Amino acid sequence: MKTTLPVLLLCSLFAISGCNIVNPKEEIPTYIQIDSVQLISDAPATHGSVSQKITDVWVYYNLQLLGAYELPARVPVLAAGKGQLQVIAGIWDNGLSGTRAKYPFMTVDTFSFDSKPAETVFHTPQFKYRTNNTPPITYFVEGFEQGNSFTKRNGDTTFTKTNNPAEVYEESWASKVELHDTVNTFESITTQDFLLPPNKECYMELNYKSDIPFMVRVEMLYQSTYLTSDVIGLNSKDGWTKVYINLKGFASTYQNAKFKIILKGELPDGSSSSKTIIDNFKILYYN
Image (tube, rainbow, N blue to C red):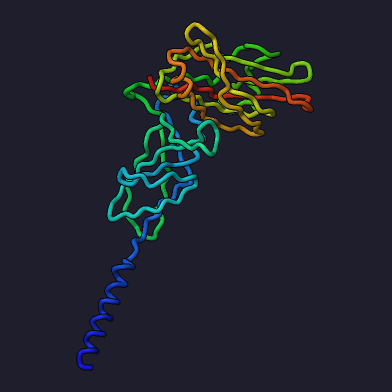
């Protein structure tokens, strides 16, 4: 019996120590709250509108990925002392919520902070369109302030400029197409073609609102032959929305082709009229 108590006591001490090893003290994160973001431009003549639909942020802590977060985002960060976040703008690729992607033409927002375990630090990332890059970026911008880069390809009508304040997204002009019972289709094509480099990032940006769904297509002059292909169908929208359409796959499949963008729609059965309005059409790609 004299040896039993020390042995039991020793076992108890190991048991207590073992609990601390199995259940170590949990670290408490600092929370970074990102409710919204800003997009600015230091070269508006080159970049055009700074309208944006940044839906997500891809967050890195000291260059290590923490994850992609839908806005508004509350990001837990296990930090000690000073830390630095890198925030990348995220979009819905081709306007689809299931295909989220980092947008390659915007700069990274860098944010330094002091860790405050269990507390919340508020931050509004600020992004810019990239400039002076290697390789450089080509920006084609049509805001309809000076001209109209779309003309009739087929169908009954095409986009024409409007300066009706109720029909313009920003500034003074936009472009619209109206359908009714005797004019019930449109198919419009860009007057300019684009030589999109293969295997490099390439996007189309567009602000639009429309009573009807319509199709975005590409026409390609590939090896002396004209080809057309559907890119994506856009849903009707009562209010203005922004879409980012990924063209990289087409440029890589049809290398060295010349591309034009087509917008095509028709009046649905049962509808007597419709209006489709577009603004801030852009093509962006790395050279």
